[in-house]
Length: 498
Image (cartoon, rainbow, N blue to C red; front, side, top):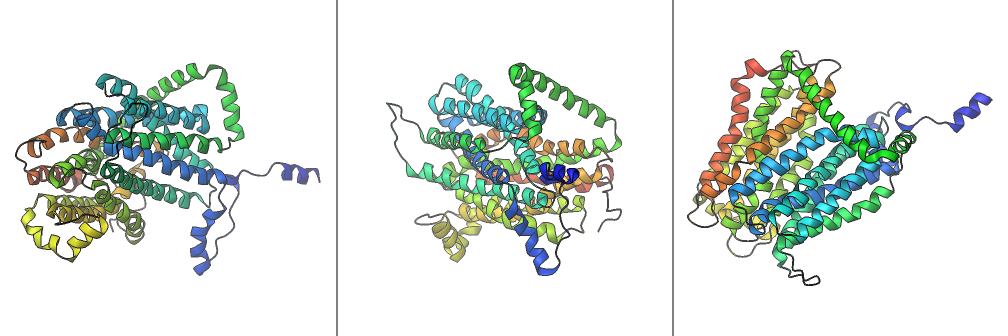
């Protein structure tokens, strides 16, 4: 009896409970989706936090280059370099270091720390147009604050879901991210097209500062949401131990994270597969650069070629809507194909899509005046009058690109996991951040391409700018095919290519 009473007082944690055997047939299929309905409150709060954090981040991301040039006075080249070689890579580097910090001080404290840093940084970006102050006290701290949220959200999804709920939880967190991206696109267009003139105690924020104000407001809303997250017993114990010396503990943790990251690469460099996976990720970086240009180049292209305040957010949302539908569908239908082959196919489709933007606009005049063009321009984008051919070309480009992205993007992470030596899956998984880092470094040169072919003043040749981007995207599939013999590694569970 004593043993029974003890068991009742100390139930197993949710993640250790063995789920019952799954039902078969239709009930089993439906059960795969409805199992999430019994999730803990903290998991739903994690989904809400992911949505809010990503909306705030995405609105800022779309606004950044416009704000740097029009409010702070940076040239296209300088704005591109600041974003591509400063803001974006810093966020990736700090993300790599943030995982150990989360383990050290706990989820809730890391959440609070990241949101507090983002709130102060966004407030600076809203209120100042002094370049050095905006960059050092706004942009750089914001990169740190945003980086703290990435591993925390993943860890929270893992911690607050049971074994049976885990797959669906991570699928939902990916979907929530895309929904946040969609919401940010609509907010971006709404604020820019509203032309609102706001005065707060004599302060008149520009359109871009108004967009930052939206992000700041969302950041403030996040604080009470974090409050409702419960801390587990082990996390509470760690927090109590570190509460007396939090500042020194943070510094020590960052130093330890940096040493562990260096040690990780030191261990991997000597392995035969490392150079191959590194070359693979470097090539994928060219595809990621094309994805990133939608935030860092496309807003300026839209204003200069399509007209000031062009609904570039709604246009970019075509990608978000399609990925939400296509990613799970393509994944289910192509399970038998190797990850490497899928990346080649997807990369080729993506590159082909970009080439649409390099074609003569006259080829799309009839389509712009037809039913498809009228639906895109008048119904979806809410435009009036004649529809510029680039609206149609952009819609087609994003549709094709989205199909390619659904093929290649999820399989990049699968490839890293499939070729990892046993016991080093996490180390190889960490390398999956490299394509985005490479893409961000490449996009740092986009300011020069934009200034050369689509300058703010003077003659413009946008088709040449897009030809450069299309050729850059082509590097990935061509390189993966040409160097397949040297960089491809057998994938676990796929001894023969399907």
